[in-house]
Length: 223
Ligand SMILES: [Mg+2]
Image (cartoon, rainbow, N blue to C red):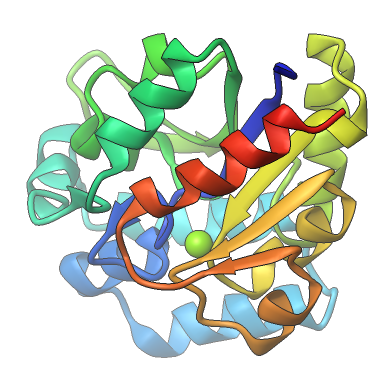
């Protein structure tokens, strides 16, 4: 059996009840939708970088004085995707290396998967920064969201010594297209993007993450 590097998207793939965690938090914190849209537009028009966009969004939250405790409370409804813990443990126990390449936030994983640091060898996502009083101070933005998710897979494969042919990526939306095109095996799960469904090697229907296990077992058996 081949050992594989298996990387996951987070929002909508490992975590249910959210399409994008940033949106969920903006709604909960009640930031100004106009300002939010302006920064989003500036990013897509290439007027600001992804890191600047993340910083502007987090500044909107900082101006509301939010703490880590507030954010964790706003994320209370977040649940792991159905079957996610079983699927992750099965893949981990089978000897595969697990990773995350996501534009989500570390606190979303803290909320839905308290033991995520033992499950995943490498994690590329956005990290929030808090002071000693747990007041939000800033964000350490990932270099690997959207079109750069593919670079994230390349970098993670290099760090772990896997050939790209021995990599798997599982995601749900348009921001997973670049990495789906690069991965040795790409799985569209809980899919909300026609483009992702077209470029993925396999589309897994339904919302039970255990449904990816037969696909990965099959791939691991092939040379
Ligand atoms: Mg997603």
